[in-house]
Length: 142
Image (cartoon, rainbow, N blue to C red; front, side, top):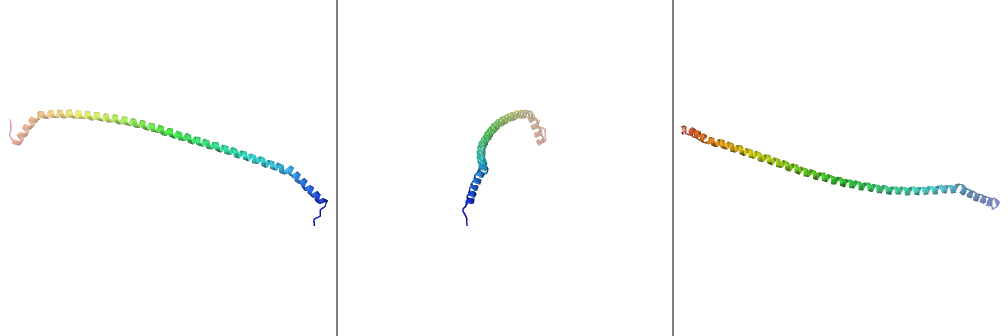
């Protein structure tokens, strides 16, 4: 059986002294290191969350800037397109006017030539008629 004597008391005192010394030398520094590490990790976590928030804001700003640039690009493209359509309309109108003038000139010239040919033929109609009648009748009419 277990005997309670002075050695047990010495052992208990020795254990308590060892526990005090280990706490002073080993456990407190380890707990201090662990506490500093925990605080540092919390600080890093907080900094990371802040950086993620800032990155989200910057991403949002970039997306807004790109959307604005797209809108400006579409607006400029539409302006160029409208300008091109106006220029196309002007060119087509000028081409149509030029074609109409040339057609009118050609008609006038053709009408003039037709009138000249008619006058030339009218002066020859009598001679042709007489010649034709002579050929049909087979004798001289004059």
